[in-house]
Length: 177
Image (cartoon, rainbow, N blue to C red):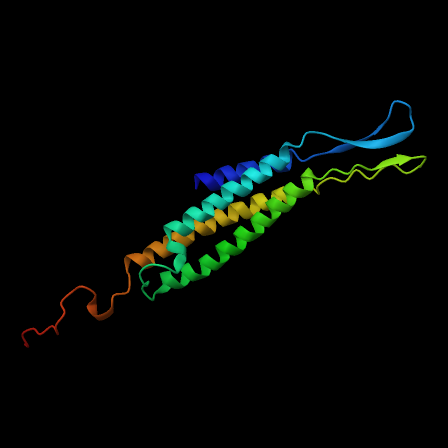
């Protein structure tokens, strides 16, 4: 939960600190060019990416990635664990794509200059909301991961044990009344 919380905070900070650009004219007034402010949002986005990846890896190791280990009891908990496993991976991939694409696009700065042109240069920046979408999917991933682990734990506690599983090996015969 702490890793998800840190990733969410970094993604929100990245959204707030996206790069912005302004058009500046050189000293001799021959051309215009773009000047970008600090690039801290890229670092925040990469940090959120890594913390979310660590959180997902921790959940998958704790649950043995749902495919290794003892067989789970065929119950409602196992069914919900399967559904939530798929959903958590889907939300995780969407969040990671948003964070990675936002970080790459935020780090990209155009070097266009206009000489003897009336049109100003195109100072492209990251669209508003890319890191915000990543933060939203981090939040959804965190919630779904917690429910997945709860359902997985419930299904694992009641593990499937064929033939009575560790109880009496013989046929139980009691006094007939």
